[in-house]
Length: 199
Image (tube, rainbow, N blue to C red):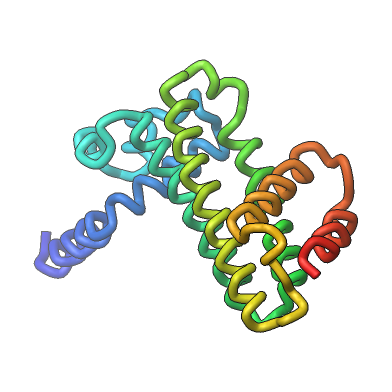
């Protein structure tokens, strides 16, 4: 083995070890999305990542820890997309419409990947997931509340004083989730009602 080959191998190993958590999560997501929860194991993730099983356990002592970390990352990616919308130059109603569409995509994928019936065989997974869901729902409500307050200060036609801003944000988020899950009425109908409430 010559020195160039040895240096090349060391650089490859350094690159892999540089971001092992990201590598592990990427491969775990790939397994979960393509092969399902039942095929997601520490051993399969280690094999896909080209890492020793012990290395995976250093970062994620249990499969549940790994799944919860993936779920957190999924929520965080959604919030990054929502923040881009919130800080755009569009009107309040354009922003809310885009937030609704982003949530629609998020919830559809969430149901497809995270809420499969096979996952419910693992109560710890479901309980931990629901705890995180409540945390992120509250975070979403607070972001909508901040958006309402900001827009009310910029646009005097937006009035949230009739209803507490936090309660209005909850009303919006809960209606978004209901519309996404039940398809009872169209977004445009909700927007008309919202405009009546806010003006």
